[in-house]
Amino acid sequence: MSRMVFRIEWYRWLRTRRLVALVAAFALFGCLSLFGAKYLPDLLGQSSEIRLLRTPDWHDGLQQYVKNSGLLLAAVSMVLAAQACAVRGDTAIGIYYLSRETSPLRLYLPRLLVAGGVVAAAALFGAALALYECHALFGPFPLAAATSWLAVQWFALITIAIFTASLAARTHSAGLAAATTAGLYVLSLFAASLPSVQPWLPTTALQPTITTTAPSLPAATKSLAALLILSALATTSALTTPIRTIRTTS
Image (cartoon, rainbow, N blue to C red):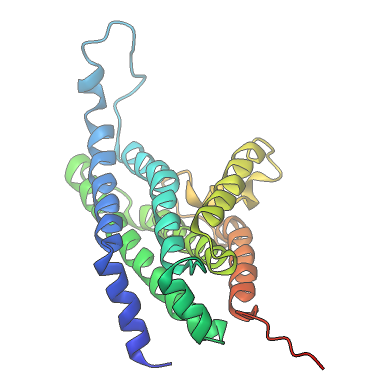
């Protein structure tokens, strides 16, 4: 597999402005989430009906970021990744690829790798910006613990994007893949009410609860296990299912 294939996929992200949209989304929420938490008392100061129990601190700022990134930015990431990896048979470019390529590995692997790399870079940028804003607005905070929680979420964002992109490659439909992932997300939110199930749900990794201590390895593994398994199954299916079947008559 030549470098040219990966360069083409990279240029597709640039030409369609998916890269710009993704980075801009992470940058926007990386700033606004922290600012919103910091200046919430000022925004509510004139209200006679709403009172804050305490002044927001660094914990509230990062918690607001992971809530936004675990829901809204996860949705943006998986939709853009799915669009980049879906090859539709009813478009001119889709017909070109599907009629000339026989290997799903050569067709989809570069798309999946580039999509995963772009989401990883954008999510890393957003997390770094959130940590910087957290220090600038709230002062010193336990950087190691905060970074550990954001690292868990970073890995979850990449994994759910790869899962959705693999579904799009397998079904040739970005919309169907995104809808399926959204349905699983909603089911996870409902299942989170069960204490015995909650540690194993994807939403636990996508929207972690920030604390002053770093997450333990078993807890982080539990929250990522379902996403890893689903992503591995979807990717394997996308890369091994034949693009087309040639039947011969005897």
